[in-house]
Amino acid sequence: MRNRKKNGWKIISILFFLALTLLAGYVYTSLDFERQAPQIEAAKVMVWNKKDPLSITLLDNKGLKSFELLLSDGEQSIIVGQGIITEETKKQRLLVKYPKSKILNPNAKQLNLKVTVNDSSKWNFFQGNKAEKTLEIILDVKKPNVNILANSYSITQGGAALVVFQAEDENLESVYVKTGDRKFKAQPYKKEGYYAALIAWPFNEEDFSAKVIAQDTAGNLRKVDIPLYLKKHQYKVSWIRARDKFIEGKITDLAENDPEYAAIENNLEKLRAVNEKMRLKNEALIHSLAKNVSSKILKSWKIKKFYPLKNAKKVASYGDERHYYYGDKDNEVSHSYHVGYDLASTKMASIKTSNAGTVVYSSENGIYGNMPMIDHGLGLYSLYGHCSQVLVSQDDEVVAGQTIAKTGVSGLALGDHLHFGLLV
Image 1 (tube, helix red, strand yellow):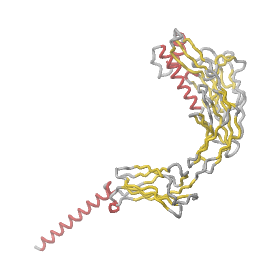
Image 2 (cartoon, rainbow, N blue to C red; image 1 turned 45 degrees about the vertical axis):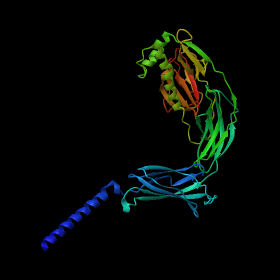
Image 3 (cartoon, one colour; image 1 turned 60 degrees about the horizontal axis):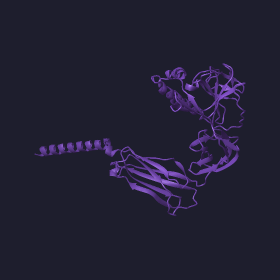
Image 4 (cartoon, one colour; image 1 turned 120 degrees about the vertical axis):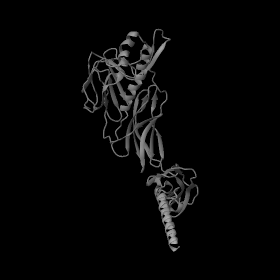
């Protein structure tokens, strides 16, 4: 009888031990009891203007449960955020606003924000995993200082202007010039805190204004108008008959050499594809190449007038609005703008650069044909299209007066000439 009781206790003990082992295994392997603490994503040191909310992100692989945000000036503290997260959420973005309460010292230069977060794990006796992080906050409510030092007197529609200015702030983050929805990068000039920028007024936009904008890391923004006298310009409008010979010649050649348009058989569709879609694609490449402005301090910058082709005659102007019609003038079939000057001299005439620079492109580019493009600094680029020969390579440094190419009929050119363009 005693042996039976002993055996019974042994079996119970073994079963109890097995149950504990299984329970321990479940606790240590189940996601419900995961032991990884939540993460708090935010910069260790933040700069705050008190106006815009600070952003903090909470993360957890199981799910977030609760959080608390405690803001302190070193003497007084106030809870600026707390909550229970009821839905299963693995990521939560918190926006911290400066408290309206006057508990904190209004003259404080620095604050601390203690972030506490718990996850929904059943670990730690169902309390979950906990994470804490104290963030240092530097208060900055002062806007950057901006002073316009010099600028072009005027800007012509379709032209460019230069501005030199000073921008200062302890926490300066970015400076640029904004014209409409365009941003022009300002390059450091002469010494720290001074900048220069070239800006442009698109030829096909009637209105124009320019502002220097400086922003610090706290989000404080200063906008200063650049005083420019605006000169309107009326650009030429041309109506051009699209003849079959033109479409079946140059247009077809260009279409067949581009897989995107090679299958088009209809002549008018082919014309639109090359004159509009291919043109925009080629110009997008040009503009992408012309975006770079150095962040290095520019010690000096001088530009002479460009005179790329000796004894040349202008055969087409910049800014021409061109309407193509087929047969009758009422039958408009395509539309485009001419964004450069066409200059003609003798066949295969030498093309020279009037200013030193770096070659950023030296290859074929659709309707522009063989096309070298040169960076002259401060965001100014020159472009030379329809060349028969290109005598420079990408990354070459060129000097003023150097022959860089020969005129030709590559791309969408009907006669030997140079398509010359300047970009800002």
